Length: 312
Ligand SMILES: O=C(CO)COP(=O)(O)O
Ligand SMILES: O=C[C@H](O)COP(=O)(O)O
Ligand SMILES: [Zn+2]
Ligand SMILES: [Zn+2]
Image 1 (cartoon, rainbow, N blue to C red):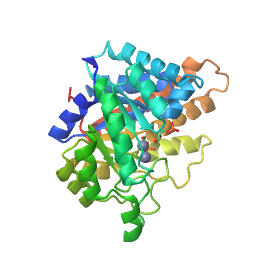
Image 2 (cartoon, protein in one colour):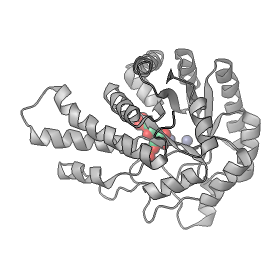
Image 3 (cartoon, helix red, strand yellow):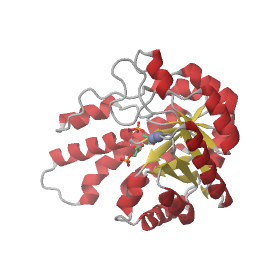
């Protein structure tokens, strides 16, 4: 099975209405934990790296960073009987997008959502043309990631506009589409109750027919927040997208579920706990172990929530 085009994973998910988590990584340990969890669940896996992750891995050289991730992911994927894809998350720098295409990423996101509609469409079209010529699939975004307050006017300004979504998907030739429906990145997503615009989501699915992507989709699992806080962390007031809300979004057409914060929190919980309990330890292979076990557990829980177990 091994290394595939992200489109293969998401077209199937869109047809059969389940979600596949896309997990952000910066290093080897997160990749190992994610793939171990996905393999155990027999779930397809999407690994994604931000521009920051690529610069970090390549120590500033993003061509090197992109190659490191492609080589690392392929090396593990080749031995697994699940489909594995590697995706560039929030590509904003044209040079980094090109470096990823050249290095052999399965897909790239062009995030020009901060430009006005016409510019976003024009830039997205250009990237889609180049990426497709290299056999790489493309994600793009419309709207801004910001939580919905109780204010209709504010929501209209930040959430995806359905008519624009139709034109954008019809003209840009993208493969999967990220509509802003009320989530935001990080561990502090909602002040009150988690609130997403399901009606808007349903309309976007109906009108575009594309595999859809939910950004800022971490649940901020309180079990791990608690462990981290018992060992010195302070994530007071953190709040994510609860699993029943995630399930609803999948029912209404979300297929790629971007997850970074949940992995970071599980990892830091394990690391802090281990170090607190063994002050003499300085072998990284020992103190990363619990961190990786917790990360793997979060990965498997997500796979169950989104319904991608066994979908290979
Ligand atoms: O959207 C994300 C990456 O693109 C990650 O979102 P979280 O911060 O909710 O994990
Ligand atoms: O969308 C944002 C991701 O969580 C990546 O964040 P980063 O830029 O800190 O790597
Ligand atoms: Zn964006
Ligand atoms: Zn995102």
